[in-house]
Image (tube, helix red, strand yellow):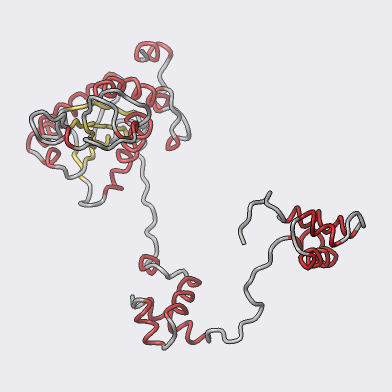
Length: 323
């Protein structure tokens, strides 16, 4: 039984009650009245305290010490073997002539309750380039525009979806384009009205210029398989800038995990971190938050340094870029 540690007759109260009876301060009848239990319960905890001391005041398992008819080992092994052939629990129960509950208990003990448990977990493939600029990661996140606080603040969903529909009077959507350097985790962000090739090209140019001002030369860029990144305009820009364009495997977002993680951080610490009155106010705060991320926020992926510290700038450079 899972009880609160300060509830009536917790292990502490049981010991207190047993000690008061053993030392003669209370009779069993008086202890039963004081602690709100029966005399039989008092006797039980007194005897257990005498036998086991304070350790005996905890609840015992209700499981029997010995099962009368445990599932034979060969049946257990048969259930496990059939599960490894991807049979369902009820199918195994019919094949082995036991109850589905027995199959469930056996599979749970063997750690094979879920089908994904049948295959060993693939090891995480983590990588990080050695030098800033060796690779940047690009991605896009869609946000709804708004002219008043939404349901996350007010709790009222009435009329929340209609203003962002495609209607002429709708607020519409805006798109957060993000770029993060693989080695240093220095990020660059901007908001565009769409996720088309023109916006992707403009954002990449702005990102390359931002990193160049920090003294970082970009050589590779990784994106997902969005249409804007597969466009000829984006391809031609990468060729013009001398960038090697790497696209992730389809339906494998973890390959671009640094950008995915950055977007999740931005959602938590910027987009939904405070009650913005309008989406413009939220967009206006983005450069301030990105500056904080780059210059002041310790990052776990680089041993809790700030991203900008990886560049090892001297004092003059720090003063010139920090504003």
